[in-house]
Length: 297
Length: 99
Image 1 (cartoon, rainbow over the protein chains, first blue to last red):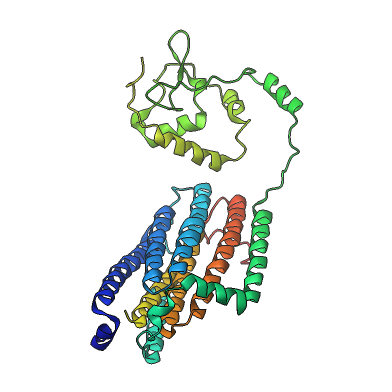
Image 2 (cartoon, each protein chain N blue to C red):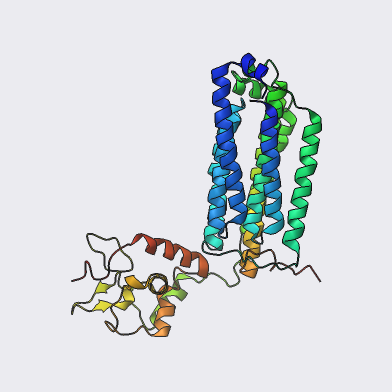
């Protein structure tokens, strides 16, 4: 940024834009580097959200307010949420293995990155990009109107093709994500027969819910005061035991151990796939932060 | 603010995304790095649109966003299908076509 350009563009506005740019540039580059270094995919997604939000503000600074809002709504709102949904299904706690499977791959990647950086820098250095055109500040005033005029006149055919692309993408996602049933869906009659044939024909008792905790990992109390182990979902009990040993929901030896066949029939009705519901269960147990024996009579 | 600064930032972000695509093993993280590269290119488009005081660059950036959204939808659906079959999101696991 030359001094003449500073004087021409107006001291205060340009200084504010410079400060915004430098702050956001540092933030976005740091978040981008952190994204390729973070081991957990969730941390990568959060850092990518930081990069996208900084870029949205940079668009607004560069005279593209419409694109700034589209960036926030489409990227940060839709695309990143989609990423997070898939992360929840694939497994939030899955860590990337940092082991090199191809020997020398990181070194080669680093060399390629430096080469790419040098190449792009040389290209941009030779391009001699000047200051913004004198009409620069003016075109941002009616940004949305100008974009609409362009999209619906000169770019109307690409716009229509975009609609076809979006429909195709939605159809493709539906076809790819659809799962064929390997077995025919059990009828109500077969379900009731399975239930009677099992060892626990009645509905299982619900979890104990106290006034101070909405805790599904707390067992219900039987009439004689002993906790009922059947009232806690076995997935939740397993998760709590393995995750936080300080919050064991069932007192040791408090109830009869669950027979293995019963544990299977307890959750077959609403559990068809393992990791999805297991993740959902771990999410719900994460909210129930209670001390052991705090609200237990 | 000169547009060359914006282009320089776009170059840096693009290279970071490229390194991520080359280095990471998780297919989801690779997708995120591709998104970062698309965002960097969008920033360059916006910077050049500002330099020439011409809205065409912004229109192209808008179309890039739409195409990126469609790409993410289909890519994540493919990833879900692979995960359902292989129980893994690592790119090292999906090697059935290798031999």
